[in-house]
Picture 1 (cartoon, helix red, strand yellow):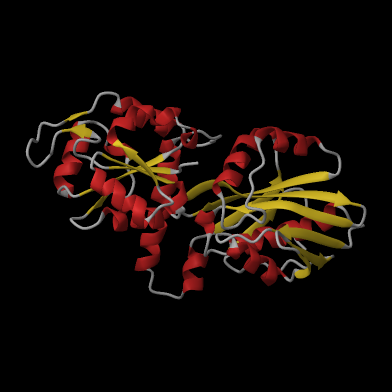
Picture 2: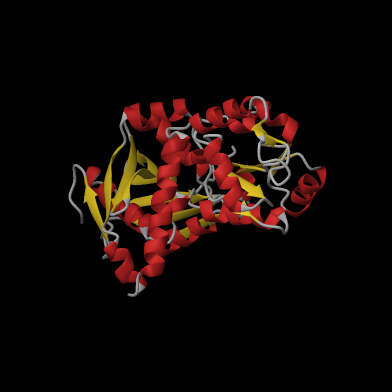
Amino acid sequence: MIKCLIWDLDDTLWQGTLTENGHVELRPGIRETLLELDKRGVMQSICSRNEPERVNQKLIELRIDHYFLYPQFSKGSKVSCIQKIAKELNIGLDTVGFIDDNPYERYEVSLYVPEVYVYDADAAVRLPSLPEFHGSVSRTGAERRQLMMMRMERQLAEKRFSGSREEFLRSCEMELRLRSAKAEDVIRLVELASRTTQFNNLVQAPNLTEIQLYLQAERSQLYVAQLKDRFGNHGIVAMAMVLVHDVTAEIELFCISCRMEGRGIGTVFMEGILSRMYQDWPSLQRVMCRYRPNKRNRPTLLLLQSLGFNRILQTEEEWIFMLPLPYEYKGLSWIHLKMEGASIN
């Protein structure tokens, strides 16, 4: 599923070349494509060799400037611009789309970053009908841009901060609220699982029906965590699907938003649910968790190991980890955990 579409400008987003004709107009159907992708929560950006100030002026004139995040302007290779945008948005290149009228540019991108979806400019109006632009989303493009703006504000604040890394994290006033999932969370949970590859133990995404059935099952529990800090409310950033078998609990799937990497959210969330599940089922003696190795989800393995999970079985496709219960919650000094319906042990 594509998370971000990167646009070329001349003869792609608009007709003509901006440096030759300042009166360029949007190509037919482009405005509708921008709006539809935005409604679906697809982020959009720009990769162009035009002058930034002139482009910004034209985007404002065309009333589409609000659609684009981290636009990149460079006379060099567009490959580096695409890589920079993906890095800034903290998404994988395999979730990026690039559209350009120039066959040379498309060929270069396809050659050096083959994970990227590449489109000819003539395909612009058909993009919303393509399967890679479909997926369950709980946030519009406007809401995603707001989240990105909060991230940018946080990054800027960190650059300006003169103290230690831990002092900065403490100044962010992070509060993580752990609770049981509700029916109204389902669409967001489907989206979170489908968009998360680094912190996803199975690199897998349950569908809407699977999550709805999980909420109704008697011996299962679906935990979620919501984050807010001094920069705003980030909504649900983590989930864990837990199935209980007598004295053993299995974390069937856990996902933590890649946007949260580097803050310790994953550690606090996982410690929180390990403590919480024992309170919900005091007869539990151990918790199991499967892990399917993938080139992108190594951070998941490191997280399990840091929590004290031990590998007890390994096959070619997956590893099985075990941790004895009860688990003592340690937490991190810069994140305040609030556990709805239970105490923090």
